[in-house]
Amino acid sequence: MESPGHVPVLKEEAVQLLLGDPRGTYVDATLGSGGHAAAILGALGVEGRLVGLDCDPAAVTRARAAVPVPEPRFVARRARFSGMRAALQDLGVGPVDGILADLGLSSLQLDDPARGFSFQAPGPLDMRLDPSLPRSAETLLRSIEDEELTRILRDLGEVPRPRAAVRAIRKALSSGTPLTGEALRDALDPLFRGPARPRRLSQIFQALRIAVNDELSELQALLHESASLLRPGGTLCVIAYHSLEDRIVKNAFRPPRPSDPNEPLTPTPWIPITKKPVRPSEEEVRRNPRARSAKLRAARRKEGFA
Ligand SMILES: C[S@@+](CC[C@H](N)C(=O)[O-])C[C@H]1O[C@@H](n2cnc3c(N)ncnc32)[C@H](O)[C@@H]1O
Image (tube, rainbow, N blue to C red):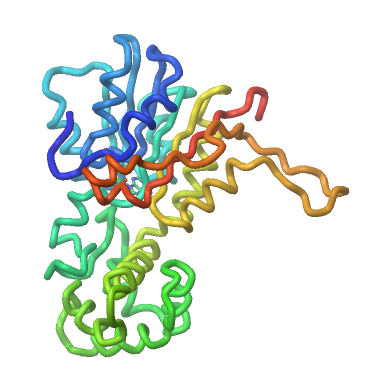
């Protein structure tokens, strides 16, 4: 079911951690171009089942079309992480054995100029992974105050000198024409020199994308919902691509460590099964440079956790 354009990251490692029982029911919460889904289906037995979800309807359509023959083990639906419970209920799917989330965006979304994710493309600055979201990146930029934009750049992109970037963005917005990725890049270019330039631009584009798609709240929803959607002993695997996401996953999976020994421990539903995050090999990064920042963490849902 693999379609060209996006190379799945840490594919073997993720499937191996995820798949305890080949007769079980699994969820790929981020279908993308179906690379991980195809690998999961390849490892599932005839009684196994895979529900593929994605907030981008194009990913769902592509996954359905890519199934070469009738595949009764697979069903695809459009859903955000925060709508995962409703989607599974709708399908009549009960507790599941494993959930995989490969966060962020696919190469197909990044490389599509009409989606506005890249500063190398001339498309409109849209950046919505789910096109039904109310605000594109340009609408967001036009509707928020400078203080809020400064906070987004600083907290979600770790952008140095965020106020200078805000001034450059405001100037680009005042040009009277719709804002494109290229126009935003050209406005920001004079702020950055030398080899750090592409990284600085990426940090700004990343911050805007995270804000437009509410990605950190969505990740919290994924962690929260998965704890009750998994059966006891079921596995959640998350592949993160930047430190903000990875920190949230790491903290959610970590056993509580109270600073005050008299404080009661907050119960956690997770038993981590990756002590350290699984990273791609040098060979994988050489073949697929977009894998370089990936960190895969997995945890098992505790028995008896209500
Ligand atoms: C890195 S890609 C997944 C690639 C996929 N694993 C593959 O092998 O082709 C991430 C996908 O997650 C989707 N996505 C991101 N945030 C989401 C959310 N909150 N809810 C549902 N899907 C989301 C994006 O639309 C994108 O298709």
